[in-house]
Length: 400
Image: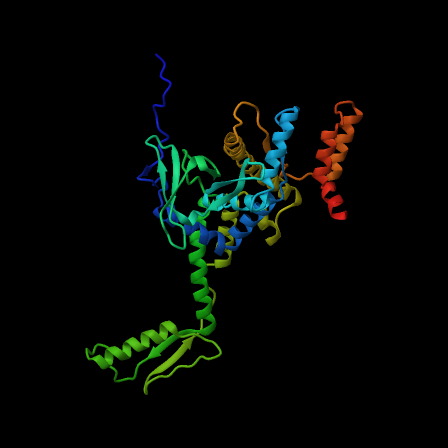
């Protein structure tokens, strides 16, 4: 007899609500959140890549599509649209919060409801539950995600949020890992080496400009003496060498007989740190397919190459937008209508506009050619699309 129940498991490594699928311990759970926060906020190249991704995705326009042409479908679409624009935070602000999944791999939102003046249950807000507040996950034996435990500031009390009251956005399922897969993960190794080289470079530049400090004791000073006075003198000399800095208030006080010299660098170093750091910058940009960011920093590259790279970049962004759209339509919208007693008819759905931009001249020529050849009927729906794409409606609204 054929068995309908589930037999296997995803293979995700987890125990007692903690995920161990990441082989680097510093990138697991809350430690990983801290690491990715530093990468996103402290690195100029990664910060530029994330800024480009989020700003492009925020430019997408969202709208509601009716389930069919019936009056009931139009009423349902109007109800869903009022929910989108009637929350405490605007829809673009919500999308911006959702996009935190890009650097962390996931973003969790609690759906908060209220009753409107007509007695219907509506969205009050879809509220972010910060990745930094994660305590552990609640999961079934087969790995199914049941909820999230968090310890949010400022009181850090333990709170449980069930999945049936939430929306979980992820860059990818990654064996149904609730923490998804951070876009910054492949860039970690390059970022780690670049960070350390920059720190060494900064120390080296300071030492080269200020000079290498050398402290010489008096001629009769016994370095091997075991008395407290000698130990204190040696300790003072070591601290002086480690902490000496050149600034507007620099100065050194030395005991009689002691000498301080600053040795300058005899020449260039064996390694070109600028070239090494640039190599790591390219590697980090490539991991998010944003290598076109580097084209303006070098004398190489062409317009055609930049176009090919940006096309691939936009394809990836389209995938993330489809994922966000799917989560709303599979979980958010059905829950909303179910709470209002609607379970027996097709529902409206949320859609986003195209991310990739085409030249209006090319688009108009394409539509015009197809219509002249009789291959396309320019319907009101197509006219609305073209107006929305060129943002003529927004222009008219501003003008009014």
